[in-house]
Image (cartoon, rainbow, N blue to C red; front, side):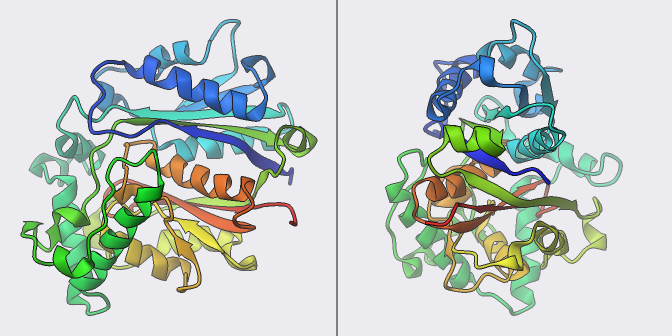
Length: 353
């Protein structure tokens, strides 16, 4: 296997609504920052892959217009996934493994604000049985949380602790959408949004962009003082029908972690794509993370949750900490679909300090 590393990562400030720029105008400065951080220009990039969804843009092949943000001329090798940018990273990683290119640009974006996001997300559901019922994403997550609470393994207080820690950690994240410092005990006095979920148990709806440069072998070493090497990456999927899987566990995350080599060394930091508080508790169990692991120091998706972007941000946040020398080995997780349906695990590691 070829050594592939994240050499640069950039993201926008994530906010509730971007009214003064379109997607191309949002992408351009972030892509420029990622390239600058790697000491590269588009001439150095052999492959470009993006992650987004046409349902948010409201038009078919909407990703084509965003190529203006990266410069499609002269013609470039380009691809797109109708998924979170973490899966675009996976495609770029595979392309780099083939040895045909030495550097790749991955970017993803979302403007969730123009539409009704909970209704848009119903398009991810089984189109024959579940989709026509129009269950919104929060209601489906509430069903999952209720099953977890009824099983007795967690409590609403545990969920409130996740929210309090995440939003407090976001105070140190200049890109976060939500950040505050409130005791978990006070959060339990809030009314339910969709029982058993309160508003603090749910992610914000955010507009945002992220971009990343990957490179292989000596190219990575030449463009990053301390590359964040991808030591393992894998993704798995659960059945589409919610009734045929155990919503209180994440077997696909556990299997992806095993195949990515998550347990082959000590995990110091983990960024988990858990949009709802109870989902972090499910993922902690699936990944066997104990209290020694720093989880979501950025605040995670409870602090900023741009659709199709928050998963790549988890990988970028871990890579940034490895670049800076704060950690030697970390794990990033991304999810897509309702109730942790699809899950990707990426293990990153820095050179010996």
